[in-house]
Image (cartoon, rainbow, N blue to C red; front, side):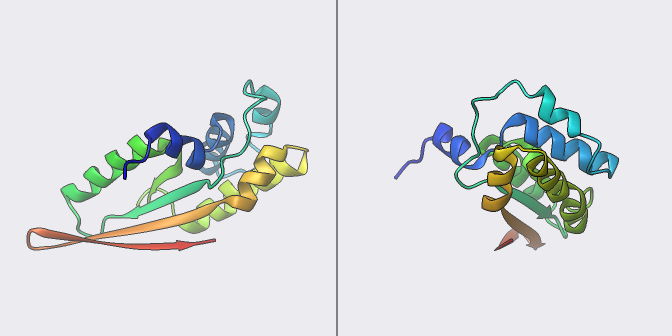
Length: 141
C-alpha cells in the first residue's frame, strides 16, 4: 500500500506561519517574540492539520544514519517540525514552542488552538552497533 506524499503533508504539516512563529520563538527563547506572525499571516484559509507532529532526533552514535533519517523526515514533513536534540531540547520546545501556540490561540487564532490540541511529539534515538543501526520510537503529548 502506497501513501501519497501530498496526503501525508496535508495531515501532518502545520501551516507555514505557525511553523515559522514556533521556530522564531524557540530561537529567540521568547514566546511573545512572534505575536506579529498572527497579523502577518497570508494563508487565512488554511486550517490545522489533522495530526500535526514534531519529531526530535537523538543521534547517540548513529553517524550517517542520523543524516539519512533527517533527510527522509524533511521529505515527509516540514523542516521546522524536525528537531535535533543537540540543538533544541524538549523542555525548550515546551517552554517556547508550545507557549507560542497557546499565546496565538489566546489572541483568537483558532488554527493555533486546534493545532496545539492535536499535536503529537515523536522521538527517535539512533544508536549504531557495528554496521547496524537501531531506531527506537516513542510518542507522547
